[in-house]
Image 1 (spheres, one colour):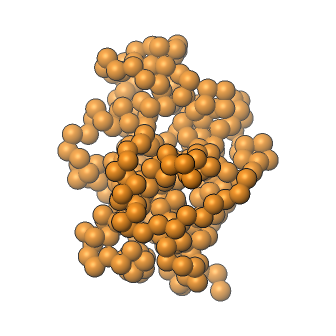
Image 2: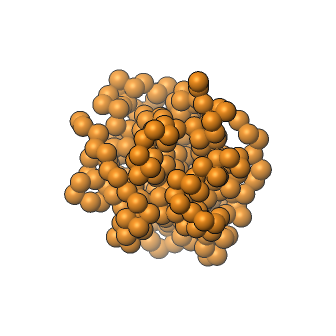
Amino acid sequence: MKIHIFFVSGSILTGLLASGSAPAWGPLGHSLVGIAAVESAAAGTQTALRELFAADSAQELDRAVSAACNWPDAYRETAEGTWSEPLHYVNMPRGVAVYDRPRDCPEGLCVTEAIVKYAAELGRPELDDSRRREAFAWLCHLVGDLHQPLHAGFRDDRGGNRVKVRYRGRADDLHEFWDSMLADERLVGGLAEALALVRVAREPAPWQPGDVVAWTEESHELAATAAYPPGFTDGMEIDAAFADRSWVLTQAQWRTAAHRLAAILDTVLLPATRDP
């Protein structure tokens, strides 16, 4: 399948967001992962991003990052964006722990391979700025997606999309419980409250493309060990104990995603860390 390149500006990103969609972690989750990552990135990385987005202040950069990190879900709802649906997840068979590209991502259209692709594009200063802004949008969004365990879930139930559950009287599927239902119920203070949950100091660390495979396998293990209620049956009610454990894990995954995204940004945007 051909990879289509789509050039976007900040205004187009904002307009597409207004269309509404059902993204992983919800719009709030993707915004906070991106903003927290940029805040914890190196000063030189922040400067590079302000230049890329023509942002005159930290507040303008936050708005641009928030819009960019949510854009891929709005884009996939458009006629020209339908090709991008597989980039948001990777499904693996039950009973396996190791990612295998020929089996799990044969055409390179999955979250694991897309993160590597768009990180490389963001780190190429010779590319047009609009293409690099698009690469940032994909990178931010997909790092967030990968850390929602069911985005690296099982092929047979489509990452929990075929598992029906109820939570506090609301009926939906298990995937949506992890994407949005839990955060919608727990977060009442908006982005400021959410950011307070993930603002934890990180140790600067280099990033290598091979790390994404390890993250994929880690998320897949969480799908197997933590994403399904104990003894689940289709249509079951999720109890408070499981919801509490899931909320703790959600916050931890947001923090991890933000720190790992910051590591990618520092690696590809700081000239001193690029390969000669």
